Image (cartoon, rainbow, N blue to C red):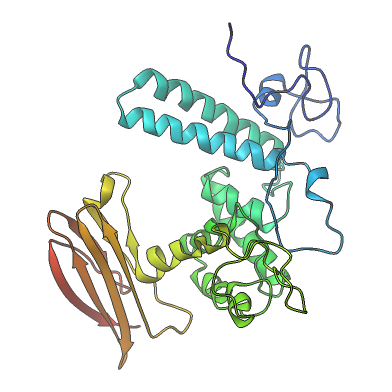
Length: 325
């Protein structure tokens, strides 16, 4: 029996039967479809989509929204990761199969959701974040996509507009595309929607909904959810700078690359790796950046200071300093 891909429906997202499709994807005419591209778009079945983005007055209910851009993006990312896992395990046939499938899904996403002028058809913060995080936009469009993300954030009066799926990637993508200052502005924003708005309302956990408590203090959603709490990864990997490396599993070799900003004068983080505790602590005083790094036995780290200096260290505790500017 031939394998049935669960994302495929009997008709494409333009409403035409698959057999006999002719034409060009991205055409504004509903009848124009590309058969191969349509086959790799996941546009059927129920999806939660970008669950609980900040509410807008004219929001369409999530169950009536087109979640094809989200589902197809995750179809690509899942098959891409499967290919990488198969490669690590030495499963060459599986790596090739899923690698080819991932490439075709990404091509379909680009054909359907990137306009000829390079802009994205879904003009939301979440869609731009996901396109950057998953590598869905070609390299030559990354800077433009990141700039549009910043514009959308500024248009929201420097507030985030992401839900369950894109929030974990929001601040890292801003930092990695040269907008660290905007990432810190969102991190420290204290009016809703934001993390600190929850804190100011007495939260001791991260809420499911950005505005999870009504004006009278009554909760209307869960008050303990992971997704928006994933901001902790930005605190560990960017603020404190503890980062794993793809070429060295289990933190056998890792990076420490702190990125200070937002007016913070100090930060610290610890991580219990399979080899022992990794720690990064820094403070700014008298115009200098002071960093302390703890490296477990049997491991090494590559340290990148804010002034650009890079060096490797072995097990033990290490102290380094550099000018802040």
